[in-house]
Length: 444
Image 1 (cartoon, helix red, strand yellow):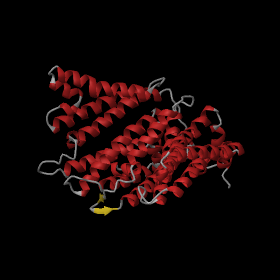
Image 2 (image 1 turned 135 degrees about the vertical axis):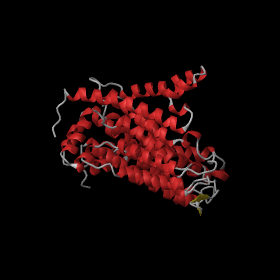
Image 3 (image 1 turned 180 degrees about the vertical axis):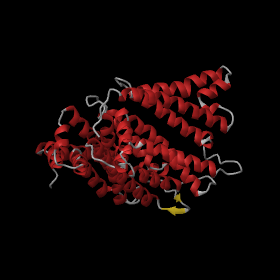
Image 4 (image 1 turned 60 degrees about the vertical axis):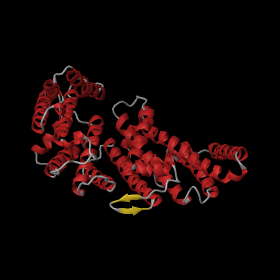
């Protein structure tokens, strides 16, 4: 075991007292379950208690510990020592994921042992398969929590955001799975087949493959965020791989009569926009970053420029490319009700995303930028909900279309209005960025 981070976490988490206390407490719980249930169904209740115990200990508690593995380092001012050490990002990643959650894995595997011993053939069609599924589901949640903790707490190390991190980690973990996959994890008796790319898939096998697939991507995401925290140079090409593979996964569930290429473009478009907003809020994107990128481009250091580039411009470009594909492949007849109405005009939506990025950069270039995410959210609510809604209620449809281009009549008018807002937002942002450059020195 040559991982110093793993050894340190094991010394902190695994003690003889805790190793003895966990099986005693779990044993008392299982004895109570066996005594208070119907003797004819005791095996089924013990199996359910074992599976529920794993979800509570490893999935719930373990996610909290994975989130605190990084935030506690910043709060205790020990992260700088790790940055100066010889440990690489991958060593720190799995050292924190496995070490910080070691005690919850210990308790979780004790619960899974009870589940595997007492699980009947029904309602759990395959106990081993169910156990593997929840294990990889917990790994996905832990990796997402660590990645979110790195992104959220780097800006404010003393901010207590563990509940928010846990909420988003569980939300992202569930969002990665299809609705039927989540339903099968919650209710193993759900036996309706899954149709994926026209193939009839076995529920249990498909869910296991799904959680393994997204667990791998979650580990990659945690590794890349720690690369950013350690200032290890990386090119944001992995993001395109995740968007492409995730879109291909969700495309298999399509229910509309659309060509596969159009459905893939729609999935990539949607995922790119969601990721763009998230990364825009939590990635370093101030005037210094812009100055470094422009300096690298001026010196024709293309790879260094790509390494300085945040991930959100890549996802914005991907969304714009897919919007153009959706426009070019638009069916002549009626569009399916599978798509929401505003998706039928994908270009204005992408332009509004670019406008919002300009608004964020305007606030990020302030002399003392504070509460960037909060300021962006306030202005987005005003521009996208409050002001256009009030104008629409007053009957000023044209003015509402100028504020929110999606209210405008005609696709050309929507795109032109959104483009005008992009020009205004980025003109103000670029002017403030140039003002900040006058007081900023960057080592190239």
